[in-house]
Image 1 (spheres, rainbow, N blue to C red):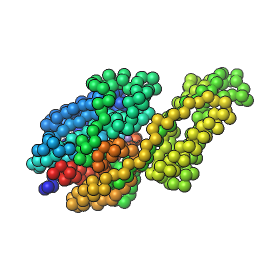
Image 2 (cartoon, rainbow, N blue to C red):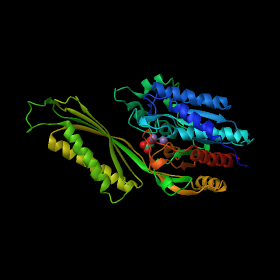
Image 3 (cartoon, rainbow, N blue to C red):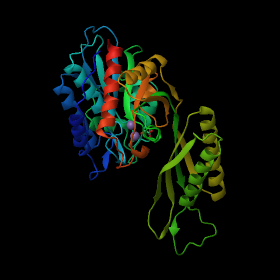
Image 4 (cartoon, rainbow, N blue to C red):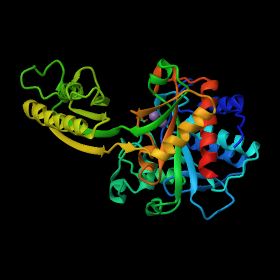
Length: 413
Ligand code: GLV
Ligand code: MN
Ligand code: MN
């Protein structure tokens, strides 16, 4: 395959344009599943798919598939893709580089006159971010058959709306049972993404190729205490739900820092209290806790430690609680052959490259259960991500897209 020419300026313009489709004022990007901005973002991407002649299909949970038909339609396709939904207060590169970058890679391969033998398919996954339902990778979980239909039906957002409601808002058609992909439908899946960590930049490397994705888990804890007047309720005997929540958040930190594995990380990223009046004792608290690790053993030990702490704290403070494991996932091991194809593509292009672990999760975590999978990482400024000042330069992105294009070409040949 002769080298392809990536139009970095066009891609940057598309990234900038998509970043203007947001629920929050730019430069903040927020696109929550099937909210107005998420829906407009999808239209934006589908328009580019049409411009470059891809055939679009959408499944019953809103995953978008855009196919460049290969010469042999009977062969399993090669897939690439990522997400365009964004958590509150996000930047413009997370997920987007893997979607618009993949379209640029396809565009560049087309311009170079490449004729794929296998079809090449972009997948834009629904709700990689856990913002609406507390569970990430909703679309890819369903594609991989990892989320049961019963659990999907039980999902509720903070207003108690279910997935059926939001599917209707998203214009999704068909039954959720049709989403699961058959085995062997793809020959491989490769996701381009910003690293979201500092390693590539610190080591002055162009490209990372992912060998393993760390194991995520999420706990939801709801606490009910007794509210009352902040002036008239004396301190002895108070049953303050916020204080129990505060102790739980500290227990999360303690559990994550005492496993003996520096890769264990724990975050209480959601902590809401009710009624939220300065002169009222908090009667309710709602926590979502994110706990991850490269090793299942230490992640699970920390998880049990947190659950034990919740029971102890609530018992001592006479707080009623419910506690639910929203997800407890194994790590993904990437496919050795696909990893080495991506690594060789980077080296052939003259880029510096290292193999690495992804500490963030991605739809690749679940695509790895469907077909041979890897990821291509590019550096991002100081490793910043999930914040508005997330940044990768057009030149860094173009290198990642070039590696993706070569990798797809090799896999589709
Ligand atoms: C993905 O957004 C993650 O939280 O790792
Ligand atoms: Mn993210
Ligand atoms: Mn992402």
